[in-house]
Image 1: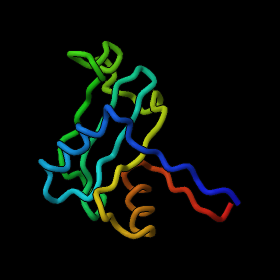
Image 2 (image 1 turned 180 degrees about the vertical axis):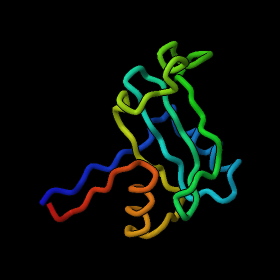
Image 3 (image 1 turned 45 degrees about the horizontal axis):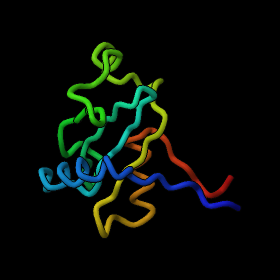
Image 4 (image 1 turned 90 degrees about the vertical axis):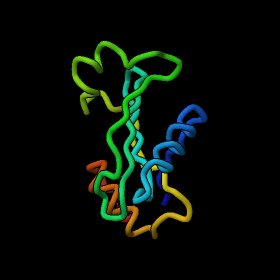
Length: 112
């Protein structure tokens, strides 16, 4: 049985994540959604899996998000990767799975 792959923030995403956590006292993590165009969507989540910040959209090294995202607001069918970057120490594994399922709409189980 292989371990599921854990996504990690890229170096360019770390400052955004830290800023979102700093500005969201109830946050226990930040949902990171990467789109096929290179734009990102991020938002803090609280211990119940509810939003703890506004959604922030950005594109690395650019002044603005791309034209496609301006048009469709980062349509979910264009998502290439998504994960939650947890603040330390973070919740237990069961709580993480529950929040990930609620926020990201997916739940991976080790029982395949």
